[in-house]
Length: 183
Ligand SMILES: [Zn+2]
Image 1 (tube, rainbow, N blue to C red):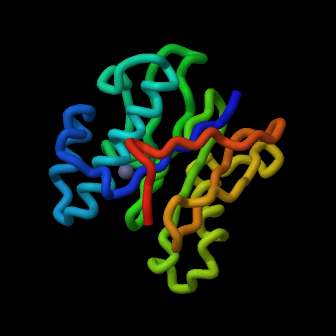
Image 2 (tube, rainbow, N blue to C red; image 1 turned 135 degrees about the horizontal axis):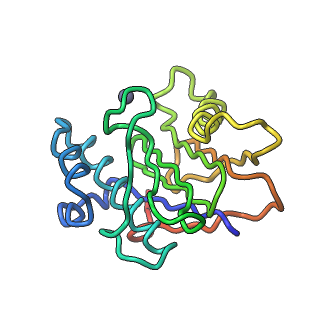
């Protein structure tokens, strides 16, 4: 089963996407003060629903996303798809600067991280930083249980890393949503 990676950019942020979100996601978007933060939150939530919906063959609005925080029970944790048993994929979401990325695997650990290099003290740390973040999001798996691979972000000046279940190596299926991304 292949890993799916979906990319989007802030250029895709459009109020029409609010219609894809549930009430909690809309409230989260509208609570953010900076328009760039609102845009990243909007495209991340809408793209996650679209990717999972395409995988399951259902409508984006019918995807049930649980963001209960494992630490405090608040609604700001990593997203987990709720549904019936083996059908439910594992997902991971990241955004930085102008980009958002969603990774989806049919089952098992997954973590993805994108990092704008200009936001780091030392841009040369980008790959190591993204690797640490992606491993954390995958639940800090034992190294032998996962494959760690660099992703090529669709804009220059970013690093991105995917952590997915170990197994026969196959390149992830890449989707640019809702349209190709241009620098
Ligand atoms: Zn919390």
